[in-house]
Length: 164
Image (tube, rainbow, N blue to C red; front, side, top):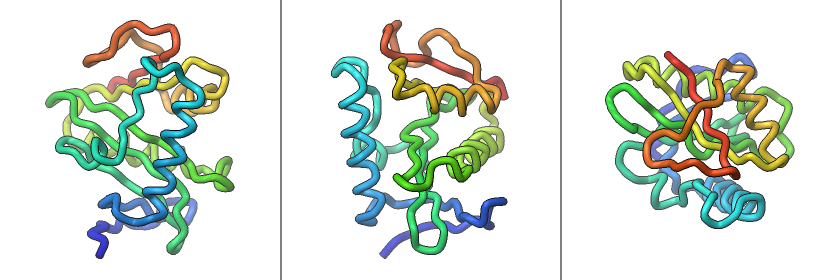
């Protein structure tokens, strides 16, 4: 039994809801996400969280659905009272270019503001594979920044932040 908390449909007719990470579709999407992160980042530079870590304290995880179909996912990690981190943003195969990631990003930014965070940051890869993600975040006001939290300088990572 899922304990998803539904929210009103977004402008694209999708629903964004807190997800308990037990459905086979979300487990499969996250497995694909991790496999692609491993394939496109050196071992010491891959910072995606596994399923157990995403279920941990301080992390809220959302899925994006249209009806029962999973379109994407993303998470917000608490770093401190003023700072959150975006984790595990992913659009399901066949649903890119439909605004799924943009809707979810707006949702996460709104949630970070509602929580009183003053900054929202993220880490993504520096390889060409990650350029669409970098462009998405830049379109929404995120700027390249130095490493934050426990991250260290890494030529395979791009760090971005948004002042809220």
